[in-house]
Amino acid sequence: MKYVNYAGTVRVLTSDEIADAVIRYAAALHQSRLSDVVSVPTADVFGTASVVDLLLAPSIAVALEPAPDDELEPEDAAFLREIGRRTEAVLAVDASAYPPDFGR
Image 1: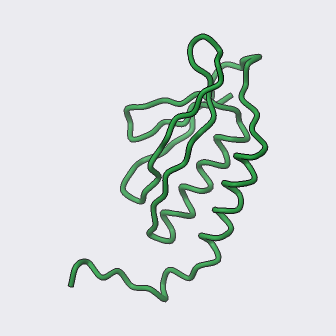
Image 2: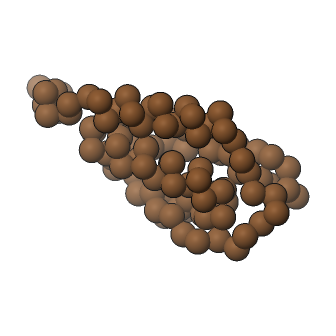
């Protein structure tokens, strides 16, 4: 289990695989100067499956932290496939071909 530390204020407890996929996607978005919202599978304090929506953007810090193992570790193959697909799509775009406009 790992915590996804989001913006220095929110800790989302999820599986190692899901946390690793989220940080890879966040890095790909940062590299490409893009943002996206992801619904991260987690469990609430009672062990009920839940999701937390996170905005991943270059200006928002995301980090991973080890967490105690839990029998209720969320497993979501559909989420892993989707975030993997999104990561590959973002990495396929050459960000240098689209210089930032900055409102000019």
